[in-house]
Image (cartoon, rainbow, N blue to C red; front, side, top):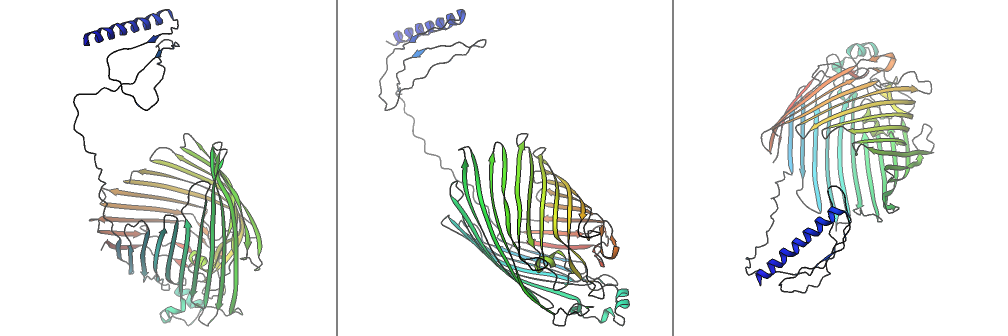
Length: 578
């Protein structure tokens, strides 16, 4: 029986081979049926039959064949049954140990101290919490000038909790204390403007500014990211600033977002957003008779008031025909005006992007704008030598912009930007003549049209080497009778390099060139060039040592008139995980 089946199979195969060869020789189309017979043990399966045509493609030409096979599914039963193999059990890699705290301590010239403490909860799917403490202090002095001490201490407690994978709650409570000195007067200035006053006889409190800020934030957001479903978030911020010379500013900020995903012609997807914000401030200034050194009394001794800003920003992000759109606008009411009048504002919010060269290049153009309040907390961070009761306004801007991102390779990326901005009540500073020593600044607002052109290029070789170079050029077209753009450089260039050597040695180097700036009373601040470096050695995962070196060029530059800097700062320390 076996021989009979074997001979019949050979004959059938030979016939098929002859048919194929003959069909290819004369190019005709044949309709044949091949029926294969043999002994088998039939098994009926509850499934559909497999019916598919066989396709044969010749190397020279393709011919149409309509062979039809009648296939009866069979299952052969072997006499030998192998032993069952137990299912493999995949064991995940053990979780790496997390160090949930570290202490960073440093000591430097003048002398200077540094202390950071960080503690964080470990892995938890539902919650995280922690504490951050930071302290920096310097007892520096410059020959023939006042003491230029400064200090900063801050503490933050934070936490986050996720409710049933649906809602995320977060909150933090922080406190910050800053102090610095109006040291921008020399012995000669003191002798000529305040005769009979000796620098050594001055109390530090005569020209020391202290700021304390306490803040609390609470936010919630749902974690719904699916299309055609509503997502939202809401945030509350409370802040209270109290400072030297009777300054106090209370801030309440309420903001929220709503977003909804949608489809465009069942092919493109987009998301619609609505951002709303109310930013309210209540401020008070009371001259308590302890104004900064050299103050000339004026009639303005007490100021009280409140100002508000309301914003609405609806927009949509979507793609259509290969273009990515960000389309919307910003509107609201501005209470931070020169005459305290509430004014309605409207700004465009439109950006269009296109990807080219297999997504290696992205080109973007747009028209955007907005307005932001310059409150006392913002002002003192922009210039630590500003006097009390600084004038507050909101800066408004309308920007026409273009941007290009070009990924030249996996390791090299180039960015270029160009913009033309219309700025109203742009914030800068000038020396206040209400102080005899001319060492205290006041806010100065001016209108200008600013042209900006810049570029940066970055090279990243895994995590071992990172190089970045950037530069910008600025041109100002001043409005309203302004003659110069005070404390605004015409250009800047920066260079940074980071090296990781075998995860043991880490090097950071940065250089900065800042163009000359026009200061008060026609004084020009020369080009500033700076060089900073940091070296860190990691002994193990728990212990490392570092050395920070700032202003390695030993240049005594001025960022503000009458305020020279220290020549150099060296700080050595360690980081340890408890």
